[in-house]
Length: 357
Image (cartoon, rainbow, N blue to C red; front, side):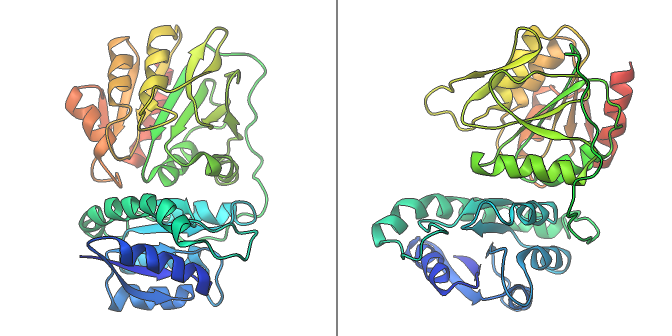
């Protein structure tokens, strides 16, 4: 039986989430909390298998609650939010502190006070149920890993840092990064460890609902020294640029060091696909090419990383000890696709070394 702690200051949302959990076979609501302080106490006493965490709450918000829970009583946390604009940055602070992923509140429009119908809840609730099951399967691993390597608590920056700006020249030298579950926190560590004057173009593929990608680019621009830009069809790859793939299409390397959007095949599990992007660079890139595959569930990126290594590029995978989920980098290691398998803190230095070579 998967026991779920529901944390939300809205009675309506609590009832929606509670109903979804109660209707799912093999799940039950362990308890409910209306603010972050209650959530911390219940995480300690109730010991839920999964926590559904809101962001904006009285007494203590979701950012502080996630940070405290992941330090003292690590547990899989899914951020559930109805708003996609006013607190986007807080969402990524939660992910950086150890929350697994972020999803929209099922069936509820944040601009409407109308409660969703039973049909609405049933229709959209299944996706959340699936994510809860996946998160619950990660529970024992998260507890073994302790505090999930969360950062020291610090205030959320209110203004962007003086971010490194890309040059005007297109580049033939590339750094590719693929990530999924646990990726935002890993991307912060990796990008923060790279020099401001990086003279290659960087392309990042992160598995996440496309509605949240613009906010991720904004957050990464604030917590690293790069100006991270959302990228789609036709985006130029310039020296010093960091482009984050967005939208509902795959991105491949095109003529003139530009990204080209391609329609994904029917039934594709991940869009944009890391494999598709990596493989296109393996075929067409003619300069320096380094690819990194970070933490994530499944195996997307493993075949693409292998193609890059076979084409003469340099390849790195994050190791199991520092990965939230070792699925993608583990698949790459099993295929012999990773030239180096390294702990996350050691990856920036290796990237710099390989680019220098």
